[in-house]
Image (cartoon, rainbow, N blue to C red; front, side, top):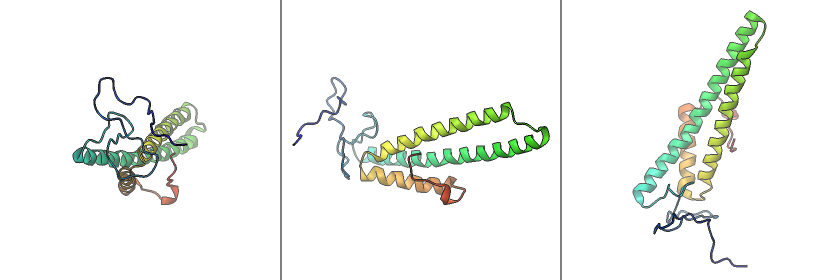
Length: 155
């Protein structure tokens, strides 16, 4: 069964003469009509492609920064809880607050990782390379631990 016309949910704004966003389901290097996650994030030429690739690198490296912040908080929280337990003999509300902060970090990380997954799912080779390069730079800058704790999963 051949499908020659695909309705992509009306990604054009009413009265907008710009072409529809390209929704590739196969790997491509084409940037024609490339929209990245949002119809407003559109590649219209060489400079918008370069700017978008830099933004993707920064976003992906930022994910590694967030992970480093989360690991740092967990380490500080564990030391503080251990010291408190030795002094007072209990954990109480400070443990609950720490768990809430860790859960918040986790939720933000999952959301962030899913956003990065959407970037990768443009199936555009340039965007995929930018995601990989951003992860590389982020790990160099913020990856302080063993690589065995790293995961390429979405979260």
